[in-house]
Amino acid sequence: MNITQKVNDAPLVYEVVSQTRGVQQSDFDDGVEDPIDSEEVYELIRNINDPEHPLTLEQLHVTNREHIYVDDCSNRVLIEFTPTIPHCSMATLIGLCIRVRLLRSLPERFKVDIRIREGSHQSESQVNKQLNDKERVAAALENTYLLDVVNQCLATAA
Amino acid sequence: MDIDASEGSSVAAWQCVDVIDNAHKRTVRSVAFEPTQGRTLATASFDGTTAIWEKGDETYECVATLEGHDNEAKCVAWAASGQLLATCGRDKSVWIWESNGEGDFDCVSVLMEHTQDVKMVLWHPKQELLVSFSYDDTIRVWREDDDDWVSAATITGHKSTVWGGAFSPQGDYLASVSDDRTVRVWTQHTAGNAAAAGSDDGFYYRPDTTYKCVAVVPDSVHTRAIYSVSWASSPPTSGDAGGSSTALADLGYLATGCGDNSLRVFGVARQAEESTSGDLDVVLVCTQENAHGLSDINCVQWNPVYPGWLATSGDDGIIRIWHLDAMT
Image (tube, rainbow over all chains, first blue to last red):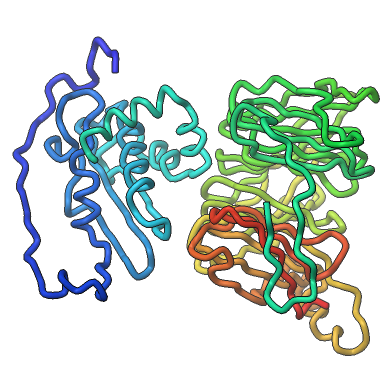
């Protein structure tokens, strides 16, 4: 991205805490289906790059394990993300990156809702509305420039 | 597009008879056949244009391109007369075009009163009255006044994007569906009764026309955004068997397509004579879960001629034709 003045010049950077899941007997059994859980969804989005800084959403605490809610049986995923500052103009773009990442990685059966963590952004309802309007998202992703920006942010998440 | 006939059905499979390749530069979002002759097709695209196609000997030819929207056009609709066309889009505007008799269209009006993306436009089945549904959570009604188009009413009440709507077959009621997971039914009522209308959601007072809400399907029924609704009349009663069902649905049937993967049909009826509110009863008659597998249903449309037949489309990329036995 070519911006001379960053929205947030000095973000707080957090240490990444690595959590490994214990290995179970059922992991070796191909007949047992592994339900998708919040840990798996977190793995998909933690390394998405911030649009402005060479840092991941995890390092900036934009995405947090505790704010991912998955119900595999009813095919629902809810992700709450926390922009670094309340007037962050990158919020919609970050939300879009999360959505694209999941669109490309999760089984189609999932209905995904993406919201800004309540109280963390001054325009959260406007941003939430756009991020959860599938027609708006589809039209936005037909914009090649925007798609390039999203793909750049996702390059580290693969 | 191939459509599969239901297994064991005696109904023949649907055949794709034509494809218009490269019709637009981006997603084709809405298509509509001209209602009087059925030989002209309008297509609205995310590329901002609306193309008009005429059926020639071999295939469809583009006879006009209507430009004007700043960005994605989202819907195109023909008035019943076939003389007027309406389009709408993300630029918050509604455009009205008039046929000039030579295959081309002149822009008659650009209506800029919605404050957000306009998702759908819909003409009244009989009058030259236009309705638009928007991301700004409102529905607007437009009419012609002295050679210009003006806003006749703003209908409020939905709590989120209004995705679309449908008129009752006689045109006396309007149903709307929304991201707020409700279906609402509205009707016009005379300005003199504005004070008596009671409910504080439903209309802005204008000297001209007001609308009030006469039914709401609560947000507990549909569990995700509702994208489409269609309204069919009750089929003509054939003997005694039909009698009891039409009493329950004397105003017909609403079908809804929802993001929770279900297709639902509701019977609409006037309330018992004791009720003077004019309110309607909208009762769930049937639910088809996973009508398009685990995919959203984006559009539902009753067959305008044959009762009980319904077409639906979904995020699974498939068009399905349904038949509702209870209705014939």
